[in-house]
Length: 376
Length: 260
Image (tube, rainbow over all chains, first blue to last red; front, side, top):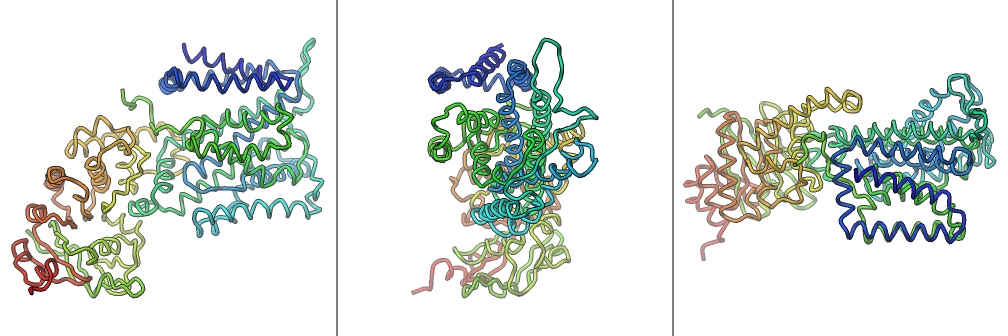
């Protein structure tokens, strides 16, 4: 019951937020959200909610899905809002990959946007020059991102901590520069990506319902939601499995891990590759939606944006990714005056989070493999 | 008691730069015994454990364990051949649950394929439930109160419980050789007594198990061990029963200094 009320309230809030036009309205909504979070924490409502979600995870998932569908229906004719929702869902999908890498196995990847970009470019080329069905193109783009990422495996495994992070930073910059100077890949101007065809139906044609104007982005948002949902289910299964456990042990204590037979390199490779695969898939679909890929969409700052979503949401807690992606991606669009300063603000925000709430907005929960075993 | 040796250490030397932590060490561990490993701080006891488990690679010499040389093998391979240990400073994953920390001890028998774990959830669940039973069984002999707190993070537990969890993790794989590195460190007398009682009880149920125990508490050594080896400056200076080594002149010198 309390879950349903909360879901309705949150959906309504996001709806108002996406709808708000004037700067004053947005500012009021932000203040409202901040005070609501503060009040519910003080009154213990947050704890009640967390317990309710833990008790009925199925219901919580169904309600989140329903909320997303209601929002899509509410904005069925607004190109801009739908495109933004696509970005939120697909960035969150890429961040699911980064969570496997950074949150579970401790491999910091500062080139998330590059792997996202590899997915987009692979799709641009395959969709324009081959007859491969587009569903397969998406999967292949993910695989290509994973394979290209494997170039980095040796340097990442040989170095540790900050140095491994530096390797990925270098790769991200390398990727952008490589695309920029490469005329075959369109150079700085980028490439066009054909719209998606799903079983012979072109999604760019949109859906015709007489009397109702429906944006051609609606099927794309639904598809993004589906991709996010699938990857979410996979990552959630991964966390509640021996794979997630092994990654956690490797992250927390490599010495103890090797004493108990865990191959450190193996788990880091699995995490790195899986994460890049998810980022590639997300990038692939994003390319088809925006119809265009250019090196400037995949800069180091975009990689930082992804990592700040992961950290803001709560490192290792995949349920926090959507709210975090909403804050990081949508808030600057709404608050025009911060546009110019947005990276400044995000940097400040990440520092504040790390100082005062290092576990993020929604901290990761203790692993319970299957609900029945939970302490009563 | 049989006198078959499980471990034979021959001229084992471990140097770190100019420091010689193990100096031509020769000793043996018999099948099924509890061996006390003693010596002042810095005499090479923990270094021996680290070489034995593959964390350090010895400079020279060999350790034959069940007929095979251990030197040069990876920690993973040594673990699979039946060696498990605890650490002097507890090395648990504090944010993970009791179950998580103990079950990882049997990593070698888990199915860790990606497809099995992600897609065959029913089969995974069956395996998982077997493991819950296994962990419960171990805790039942070792520390029944922990059974009710199986899914709480380890950071909420006291020192003695953490030690118990670490010992359970080591026993989870049903090892042939258990290396205990100062299990009493940071615990009171009563707690140490309790822990040793538990260890003895478990060993009673696993007759195949050999144990090497590093310990400073002499009364623990006296009560628990069947034989002792004393190290000083990386060499063995004495070997024998508790009574024998405490009477040894070299041991007294090592611990108390030269007689004036």
